[in-house]
Image (cartoon, rainbow, N blue to C red; front, top):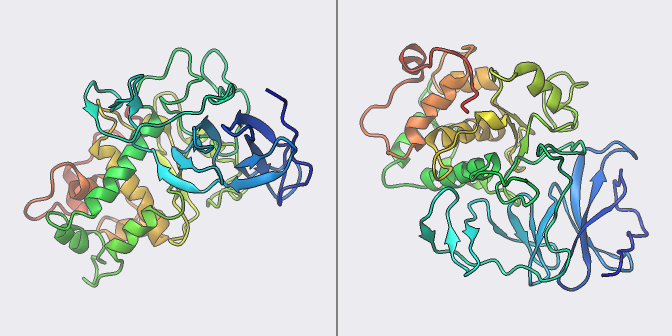
Length: 365
């Protein structure tokens, strides 16, 4: 395999050297490049494809290459699949593991499921090995650090499935499905979630919210404990001099998680961007829990409505400024849980008085 020649011309906004990562099936290369306002100031990492002579073929924002596929494309670390021209053509957030005979298995289960097998590339450099130390921590700091996934081949020993990224993408997938359930959930969602509780007028459209969940190539989910991007550069509120990592590490420790997630870029016209505390993502045998679905519902509502917690509490009929914002998540869970709602739902103030756990710790694992 010949060594790749880095692209000779700068990419707009390039702030760091290009790093070749994979060799595609056609002999070209796929790598990453840091983008930012000035050299050395990286605010996002883009995935790029380039030829052996250094010519740039395509660029994709906020993703990194993980596995090359036989059609010349690549599977990104986000779980999104791309063709040979860098165009998104699928989402594997709910991807089963593929056995050597081509069957699929849900993570954490021995049940065989139907899915389209992934035809991997046969080149030498087809799977990204990454840089991980012996204790499975990232060697290099990452402005937008990905949540750990059990499909990452760099874990030794392998990460038990599902990983945090697998579980929260499963939740996102199921949230979209349950929000679209017009037979058993539409009435409750339209009248108890997407309605202003104060005046009874519909304020937001449920179908528009489902569309928001699918904007672009899908939501941007990151690891809040490891993301070193500044809050201001991530389009978050708060102290502009802090990093996302600082926010999470000053709020959480080994036993307490006051911040389960932080949703930035409150813009219903752009994909959801949320940083998670990995320990606040719960697991079951399939990686799909009602708690995760409700947490993702809570965070997506921030991005879609552009409301902070006190305003969202007021909108949902909670006590505005209630210190334990899990009232929002627990209230929402009754509408998107595995069992559809039946009868008059609990009010959010009833949740605050009778259904809140005895402590404020959001570390669920």
